[in-house]
Amino acid sequence: MKTLFPKIEPFNSFFLKTDSVHSVYVEQCGNPSGMPIVFLHGGPCSGCKPDHRRFFDPNYYHIILLDQRGCGRSLPFGELENNTLPNLIADLEQIRQQLKFEKWTLFGGSWGATLALAYTQKHVEHVRTIILRGSFLARQQDMNWFLGHNGVALIYPDLWQELYESIPIAYRTENLFLDLCTVLWRKDKLAIRRITKAWQAWGGQVALGNLYQYTDYHVTDHDIKQVKMEIHYAKNAYFLTENELLENADKISHLPITIIHGRNDLVCPMEAAWKLHGVLKQANFIILPNSGHIAQGDEMIDALVNATENLKTTTL
Image (cartoon, rainbow, N blue to C red):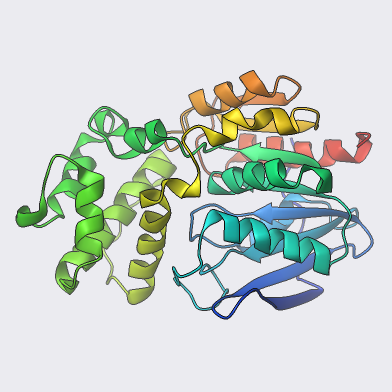
């Protein structure tokens, strides 16, 4: 069974100046002359971690990690102006050009898989292949599953109720998501902090399942900005038209693609990966019977590392 590669440090890092607002943190690891591969983190508004460098053989790959606009070490943190999916795609293309890669491989999970698909559909001529984990298609049904009465709330009704009750009574309607938006963009600081804590608890439980352990904490401005960015993308339908990623999949149907999905994924149910494989029939579709959403656990790590190792012997 494959495990993560040993810890490594970047051989270079820099801030990509994208416009008058944002500076995007980028780091390079591994072999400067190796095959270019870029790690795309989830969220939106998550960020890269040191272990994200370790899915790739540093002797073979030129590994690129970036914190997307407003995320992680990028500046300013949590900034929503000029922060859209087209902006993120443009940032990736600017990084590719600056590093002088003719083609590169994209490795993305959850929202990172969304970004990988969207970028590839726009710049397919510059993509060798993509590896997708926990694919999120950003459809209305995906949001309904995450927040609606008849989705994952049926599995965690107690925590869903806590999220619902975090909204002040005066702002509660039949639409939980719109209620969240209403309060987060008002000036009631106590209500905003209450919602932030409940949202992060809900997301943590759904993503981690039995691994999640709630701990009480003081909500910071950083937490609020992170939640606002997540909601910002959701309320704008992730800057995609409904079903756009599936409808445009024919543009990338000639590429070798690996789709990895845990059967126990409650954030992005396997139906999404199944539908994606239905239109990308050439893709290598790997179902992990004991894995969930996150890129952790022996089974998931083995599958992801295997996917990057298999590229060494694949003609691209």
